[in-house]
Length: 374
Image (tube, rainbow, N blue to C red; front, side, top):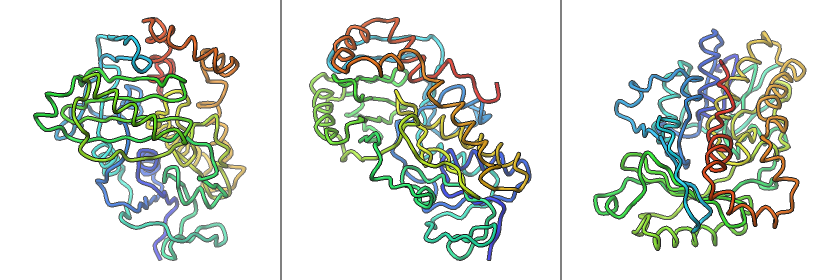
C-alpha cells in the first residue's frame, strides 16, 4: 500500500497550489485526479496580477508555447444597452487557457501524481484514511470542484444546493470566424442580464474565443443563453454560428455555501469549499488562495490533524472571503428591493465611474484585495 502525509483529491489550481507549498516544506504529498492532464476545463480563464504574485509565475517563461493574453481594458454594459469602455493603460489581467494553465501548475508542484484514477472509496482507519484500498494518508484534502467526492464524505449534497449555473464554450477560430468577430483580445466584454441576476461574456485570448453566461436562476439559464447568443450575432459581435454546443457547469459563492470545510483529518479547498466571488463568480484566485491558506494551516498543525487543530483554516477563509470583506455596493444591493435595483442598474452601468470603480475594480479585479504575501 502506498502512503503519504497528505492526499489531495483534485489537480486543479487549488490542489496544485496547496501541494506545491506542502512539498516545498518537506511534507510527503500525493495528488489524485480522475483526469489525465492536460485536460479540458470549462472556464472563462483570466488571472490577475495578485495571482501571478502569489504563485510566483514568470510570465515570460509561461508565455513560451502557451496562450497569455494581456488585458488592458474592458467593455461593460447591461445587455443591449450603452457600452462603456474602461482603459487602464496597463495590463490588469491575463487571459489563460485552463487546459494549459492547470497542467503547468500541476507539473511544477513537485509532488507525486496519480492521474487518470478516480476516487472510488474512502474509509477511516485509526488516525489515517484509506483511499481506493491502496493509499494511506494522514490528511485528506478535497479539491475536486463542485461535485468533489471528499465533500460528499462530509455530507454535502451538491444537487440540493443553490448554485450559480453557467454555460460556455471555448474554441480556436478559423480565419473566416476571426473576420466575423469584433471582440478584441485586450478588451473582454461583460454584459449583465436585465434583472442583474447574471451576466454574459465574450473573451478573446489570441485566436481563441470564450463565450459564456452564468446566472443564479438556473431554471431560466437556457432561455437567457439563447437570447444572449442571438444578440451577439445580431449585433455583429460574433456573426457566425458556434462550432459546438455550450457546456454547462456549476459553482457556489462563499456567502451562500453551508459546506463544512473542516473535519477530523479533512479539509475542502477551491470550488469544493464553494469559494467563488459573489459578484463575478470568478473562482481561480479564491481557489489558489484557499490552497495556500490550507497549506499554512497544515504546516502549523505539525502532524496533529484533528478538527480543532484544523479549525484555523475556516477562520482564515472567513477573514479572507467572508461577509465582512464585502464592499459597500454589494451590501447595499442586498438590502434594497430587487425591482429598485434593476431600475437603477442601467443608469449606473452607463457611468464610467461605476463601471470602473465598482464593477471592474471591486467585483471583477478585486484590486482592493492585496495578494496573500503582501
